[in-house]
Image (cartoon, rainbow, N blue to C red):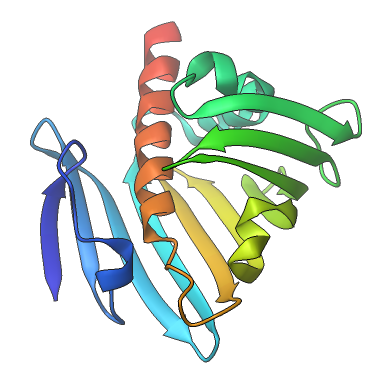
Length: 185
């Protein structure tokens, strides 16, 4: 089953997503992102794909270099960012982020980065997210023409909501980052 939605429209609630549902997101009537939700045993995955116009190398470099500046770039979402281990964004760094998504939340994540494949994994090791999920991992893969995002998670209880709304939020951020990159090039 498929749904069409605009990024500025309320879309199907994350808890209503069932296995096999796909949501296409549009911005100004231009298809920009797709979201899918499926469950593997107790683990669940929500994923999306965002079309980008920036070269993949430039997008990945900008994302990596500007990660600490998320609160300045998106003050409505990101409130604070700290590097807890390491002095820069690199493989093995531990970061702490305070953000707004329905309410103020914090998360501490360990980064796994692969420069050659232009991928970043954010493994949640502490924070508000772990009140609802036993484990949570965000994966970002930058490709030519698109960015793939996926969140793998295991619910702590059956009442824990799915994380589909985070894919919507990340898709909107990635679309805006692409616009920033194109505007600065």
